[in-house]
Length: 374
Image (tube, rainbow, N blue to C red; front, side, top):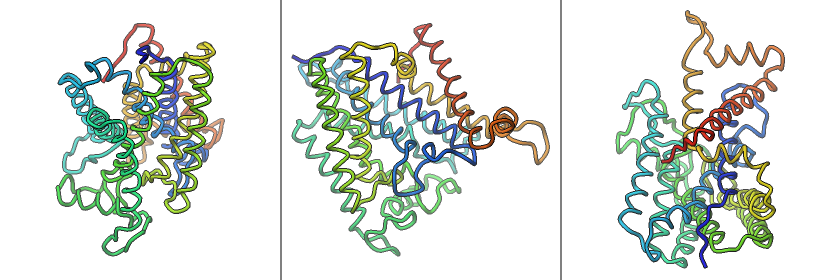
């Protein structure tokens, strides 16, 4: 029988992901950052490179639980499609709001971004699961992963040839440049010749990240809560690790390109963390350790949006007047952190303090039962 209960471990996992995103975003503003909090320069994967796919993965895991409330006999209704398109449109609009803040020059605004990728990946994945049988969904995953690999490695790019996976010469960057120039979406300097790390073409494999999460959530929804389930998640994570690493020899693990090997490798990590959350909270009923993360997970999109807006305000405003007036971020960073902890520890502490402040906001919202849903 299908279970329709809510899994607290999913909120905990989402909270871990959003906390990681806030920590990485804040630390990344500084000039000196500990390597795990920096994104890989190109190929490779750091701790910072896990947080975004984690969030996309949990979007997929939650889909069977959320969409199940609005279907009749497992058949989609108009209300389901309305919710999907409405949610996607709101997320995309919020992404544009963040990218344009605060000048909103529509001739130079960056169209794609984190929330835009979440929007499109969620939309396409949701449409797939509502309109394809399970076998068709798995076939789609294979087609997207292998099709993306073949396109990136074997389709020639004018001026660079086939199989060029450099910043400038990869097919994704070329297609994104082509779309931008053809559609005249903007003409400014925000889009450089190397493409967009959340570009249009690399959103294709990001859909698979959501779908892998969906398969996990659908499987969990039909399983009784027991330790064997956690072990199955661990075995699945190891399989993804191995496949991702092996594929990486031919199609390197790369977040900016969101390569097929990166999809599998990060899904492996996501499954491992989810297994730990599931075992600790659902199976062993030790929920106290997860409460701080659950609080953040219940208002994840709001906290992410507010934290990014705060960073933008800090780097766009200045303390004092004059040409050499430091930004508000630099002033706080230098006076309250670098002055006694040094630049490297200072950037980490500033990020941790920022995360704690947003946790405090999340806690206040939790106590007031304010849950902002998109």
